[in-house]
Structures are given as C-alpha cells and as structure tokens.
Image 1 (cartoon, chains in turn red, green):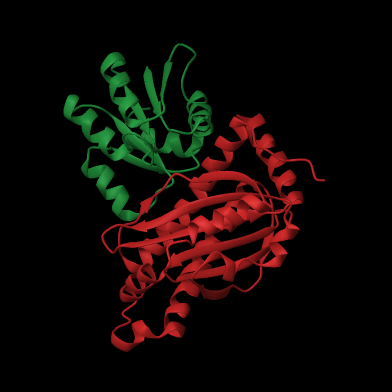
Image 2 (cartoon, rainbow over the protein chains, first blue to last red):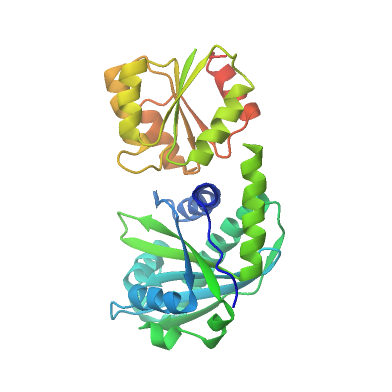
Length: 206
Length: 121
C-alpha cells in the first residue's frame, strides 16, 4: 500500500500561494474576455484517498442539477488531470456573455462549446503558470466534456489508479452574472512527491 | 522606516519580506498581518511608512482594509501586491486609495521600480 502523502503547514501554504498566483492569471484572462469583474477565492487544498474522493464528488454533484464537466489529462513531471465543474445555470449565464441567445441557450452542443473554450483557457493558463513556478514542464491532452447529473454517472474506474489524490480546488465567480465554476486539479502519487520536493525547494529559498 | 506586510499566506509574506530586505536597512522595521482587520489594527498601532497589501484575504479583504486605513490616515502609502490582476480590481484598489499595484510574484526588482516610481525609495 502506498504511503499516505501529506503536506505540512508550510508546504500547504506555499502551494496555496502558488495556486493563487496561477489562478489569478487565468481569472484575469476570462474576466478580460467577457469584460466583467470576477471574484477570486482562496484555493482549497485537500489530500484524500479514492473513497474520500468518491464522497467529495457525491457531495459536489449532489444537487440534482446538470453539471458540465470538462477534464484534461496532464503529463510531465507534474502529472494528473484537471476538471472544470460548472452547473447548467452558470453555463447559460456564461453563454449569455458570449452573445448566445434564444434556442442557442437550450442547445447543449453550443453550451459545451463555450465551456470547452473557457475551461481550456482556465486550465492551460493556471497549469502553465503553476508549472513555471515549480520549474516543471507539462503538456495537456485535448479537453473532453460531458453533462452529468450525479457522481455515479461521472465516476470513472481510472480514478482508482490514484491511491491518494490531492484536490486543489478554486472557484471562479462572477457575482453579478451569477456564474460560478470550480477548477479541480488531481495529482497522481509520483506527481505529488515531485510537487512536495518542488515546494520544499521554494521554501528553502525564502 | 516601518513597513507593514499584509497577506494571509505566510509564504507570500516571506516573498515580500525577502524582496524588501534587499532594499531596506537592518534598522528598518517590518510588521506582518495576515488579514485586513489585523492590518488595520496594526496600522493604527505602528503608523507604518509603507503598507504592502494583498487583496484576496479572509476576514477583511485588501480592498476594504485599504479603504479603512485611508479613512483613518489619508496620507497612508499603500501598495497592493496581488495575484488578482484584473483591470477592475486594480482600478477598485486605486479608487480605495492604493498608490500602486504589483503583480505577484513580487521580487526586489518590481518592488524597487514601484517604490522609485512613487518616490518612496
């Protein structure tokens, strides 16, 4: 059984700050595109096992509404995957900002197209910035998207490959437009070890 | 010189202090706060020459803390150091009384440029 990989207080604080910087760039990019003001949230970092992750998804997707979920695999020294989770109402509100109207707002393919693009910008900007900060190099698979109503229809068997998962989650919130989405970064065990070492290298500097 | 460094992240405060330490002397004093409320209280107590303030923080954020400090002391010199690099955030911070805005991560170069630009260094 893999040894449980935890972050101490300094490592967690450091990762939180790096995510804050990375996600700040992504949020600014989206805010710039739709020309609206976003609120940044403080990143939340949790280390969970597979069972706890199932519970996490169950809670997150437990509101009996549709969620648009994109996911992208990350490869490189920091590998894992990202998920961008946004509910249908937020998706429609976001689509309005891209001038979709009437029937287009009921067309799931049109909505998926908007979310794919937004998610791609958020993911690539955040992860590229984070990789730069921890002196790493990564690449992304093309994003995939699906609409899910509950965690059971979303949960995939490959998540079992993650014996322990770091969930780094942060919200993008456009208060006035009633848009809220969440980016989750899931890290595999090897990547977690790499990340821990990278964080300690940074901590040594300061 | 007394400098108040405000950020909820200890790591971020360390980075700011490291950037500052390249620019100030050993006799200068650095005070730290981890949220906007603490920053306001410490400002009243120590009356620092410069305040380096984050925006996204718990309890009271940097926007409100800047406003509170400027209401208390209209001559307060507050520079924002933030990852929230939206134009609207920069404008709001400025409107609340911040003199300048530095994008994270801060280093001694970008801090020096800002302090020189504002005539504080």
